[in-house]
Length: 163
Image (cartoon, rainbow, N blue to C red; front, side, top):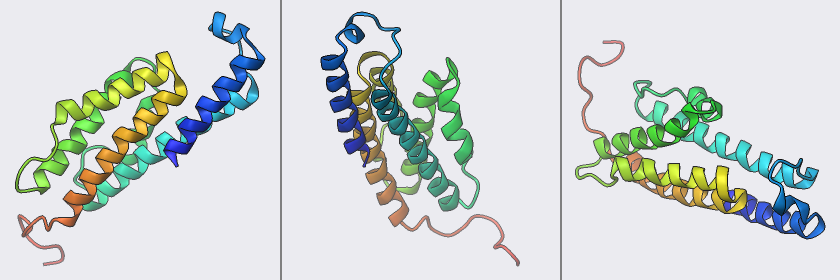
């Protein structure tokens, strides 16, 4: 779905530039509604996906995962902190995945950098291409998370609940 939204945004950008060439020359012009909607829906869908990642992480860790789902999504929208946040949360996800597997699968710094780079492309260069990059990186996160959740984490440490 994310790839389709990215492609739809690219198509909307091409239509907007062909109908309104002044958009390519002056960056602060208000975009046409169809372009705004494509960008907005893509961003909302990205935030929903981030939220869903963190819901899975909280459930898999029995509530001990440090990042709450709503916070994970909303921190993207804080102007300067959002750039740090898109680097931080994928690193934490990679650490969680590596902690569940017998051998490390993800490199936390590279994972964070991949999402950060895609987000910078989304913000500064091209929204559609940036969205495709974000969902490409997210599909890698999803695959690794799926592998980690399939592994039995082993016996619980400490007392069992209700014992």
